[in-house]
Image (cartoon, rainbow, N blue to C red; front, side):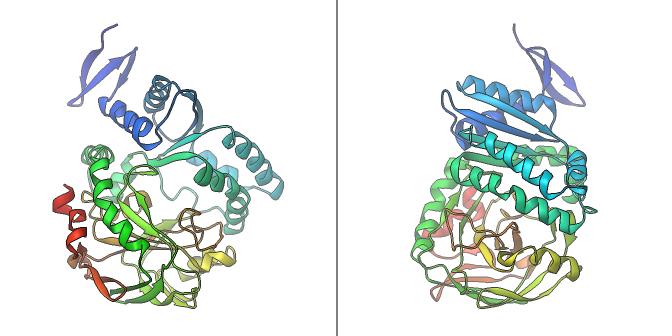
Length: 388
């Protein structure tokens, strides 16, 4: 049957197999299936849909089947997830882990699309229960990260538009533009930075309120070019666990475990956070006391997506901000690993563009990035005007 079109609120939608669908859904679904997780015939894929329109879940299923794969679909809702954690118990969390880990071990690929009408939905879940549940189910995430081809992205919502200080329609346009940009071109521009980080020992970060030094020698660096997150645009490594010395002041707000934090300041000695400050220092310390690994760092990354300029309290966007870096208390990824283990993985972001106070990144005494722009000739293709 031929596709029919309709105009709704000024936008053209397409009737496909009886379903009215925004044509951008099919473009994003195709990118995720063909490029991000590279689905092949007979692959099994888990589609984890959280507060996502049924129409997009259907487009993903159809794209997966078109690739010859077998999709499994999980539909979740953040209000229900809040209630699941609000009165969890060790027995309950262990049962969830057993069931979800069994299923995860049966698939080769995983796509999670995470929407939320309220980013603070879990703010009133007691921290002890949040920590209990997170630690119990962490093996599911560890297996997914290390054993499957996976990609995670947000779904646009009015709350995200509000956080970005944009109208709902303007934010949707921004979302689909940035999520379907030319990631293969970006990946090619990343390679010199990856090679440089692979051979770097000492890193020195300078910004207002920040003077931090550490080593990444022998850890290695990985590209984030649309294969694991959408949107994407970073190259990440990890500090040697005990090497971090100094202080960092993050200048972007962050939401973790349903609580918003601003002006976070962390002081390190021999790799461990020894002093903290924030608008909610008590809650910050509660999270960093989740386990022994939460006060050590599991990731260091430079972000450079040219379309993402300002924070919106959504880490999948904020950690890719052009001219930013993030320095992450908690779990290290095993692909770039310092051995730190934690139920926490908290990407906190520092923007170093001039309008955010500026800053410098030094590798082995060489200035690599100044005020958000890469300085060495071989890294300049990562600057915004060249990536666009």
